[in-house]
Length: 262
Length: 263
Image (cartoon, rainbow over all chains, first blue to last red; front, side):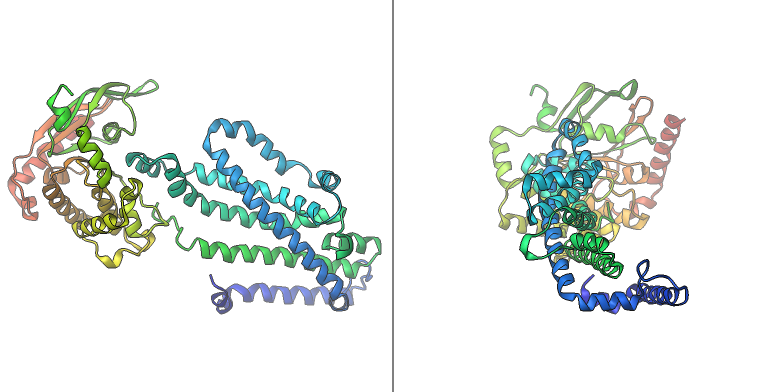
């Protein structure tokens, strides 16, 4: 779906917009009428004011975190695809290495993030590394599944015409797995944002500014709930942006990949 | 190459296929001279498709042998240059690559053989006409086509490499009756034009009788040749043949055999 098409589809964007308006109104009313203390829940107007008055710090944070998340996602996509392709080559390889790939998914990221910082030092490279580790697994699984779930009749077809290993990979397996790869990237786009924010809990960007993760920690320490709310909103916005971006990219790429006739 | 069938057709001898303890096929013997149109009918689960896969060399039998048309060495190397293949296989569904256009799908066998773009264009054009597709369809994607059109593309792909043997596994099973009859007539035209050996698996007796020179009835548990029935009608066969008394009677007779083996 192109952007202009999306704008025209009022039935898609209007309901969530109305829901947001309703929620914010409810939130505002609750804070005003319920006498909730501002350090617990600040009113929407206060959060909006903070977003505006601290736009420079918050904007820099948004920019730094999105850079790290996108770099981590790209790295994860690249290496994850290669690993998935290798995994798909033989059952033995899969059996040998898959448990260690699952390790990536199950290890608590807050536990290895400090380790990555220790190895890679202060700076954006460590944040990227954490985003990368989190975004790797969905790509690996999806590419592996895509490459190994090709209908046997298509494989038979290539066998009939004497396709060599390279032709089989390049003309059948990889194009077939592309749809799965894109699904993996969409899942990983959220993981990369989480990874970048967790990474920033442990490491700064030196003189270049502070990422969203660092700002969250700072806001908590300073008891600035309004700022915390502002950063949370921006983090969510970043996740949604990346998801929509990968979505547009995948729709464009996969316009011909509909498997309806298979 | 001792037997003459090995040079001129297919010779299936004492073929058996076993998966674990269950015997799918046993003692299948069948001789098919080059250029003949043979159909295989049988109750579902009798191993029709398995037999076809053995002939296609997509699986190896547990016992017995399949000898196929063997081109001489000289012939084989020129075949490779022209993108000609020994066999082609038409599957139960169209089995197209969804990301490839109609042209790309039809040309696939030639592309895998490393043929020139020029040759691909002329050959695709030839086959398109034979199956009733037009040049306007070239750029379309499979998902834009109806089931019948997809099957036409699949058939064009199967003849683009000018195979000497075509193996068809219930290719028209999913089509409606009118379309099936149209495709049957087109397939006969292709067969008469290309002088290909045809081995056609179906569960539709009328289709088998209309198309072939001989109908092989398989029995099941394990699958083996129960009877081979000659179809005496001369070619070219027209649609009107289906309404003749002789045709109906032969279909009835073979259907009776099928009831016998299914019981």
